[in-house]
Length: 82
Length: 333
Image (cartoon, rainbow over all chains, first blue to last red):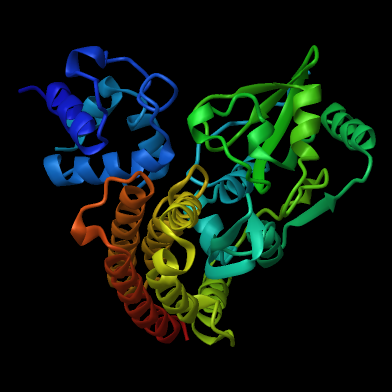
């Protein structure tokens, strides 16, 4: 499973995105916003899961905001720091 | 009309604006250093102040305090003005821009149209720099965004005069004098002492490490006292204040750790490096608390994510931070 696929599964499972399949999350979709109904409270869980699954910490929120934009940006962030 | 102003993204608005304004006048101070010298780190659980009808928990000092202390310690002069009349406030902003001065403004973030809806909530302490105007649009260096933003006059006016708790009342500020050569050592020591004093020695139960313990006791009681729905709302507010846009993450603990790391070199005190690591660990604990809080808000908490568990984490935060501040005080004496 690629990082992007794994991220999609993690997000769906941990954020209880009922009725959403990994295929429905496009790599460049905005993660937080109207499409999936996710908000900044959900971002806290994503930051935690990225640490748990990939051992990558997002501590600088300046970087975090950029990284959490989409699956593409998050995967690139993880790749760069693993 | 556009001032040659360098926009640099930052984690937190007030320290970012402070750092960017100083940089404009030739003083290159990182955001973390601005936050540390400005003694920005704080904890206060203030249930008598309501934001969105929910109690305020703050992880930073008073609004404007970072900029005030930073400029004072560095010998920088600043002009700050509040307004009653929105039209006069906008006219004063325009005059400043015409004179080539980048203008700091305090705003209600909710009314800034470029804020994405997912991150938008009523927050009246958001700082930004207006550095130009094109047609009816103002050019804005909003430090929490990677790129320059634009905002129409009516929207900016509305944001500058947002209503509610801690209303900005058109607050506008600009630097009038920046000294050339500055020794950071004393300002750093004084900034650290101010934070330690505040976190350890302010009397009363709701401020500093005592305040963190007090909050732990409250969090434990919330489900019984408030019911599940309201307890989740209280938690949501708390998590937003700790991790939301403009906080620097983990209630500013990571940013303060970066400040201590940078200060270790300037003061030639390796001890601060160890304390920086400890502060990062404290930040990780705060974040663990936020994760449990988020799960409870969103109704996906497991049994181990209980309010009691959250209270335990808060008590551990208080214990750890108490040790850090005591050691920090000794290190900079």
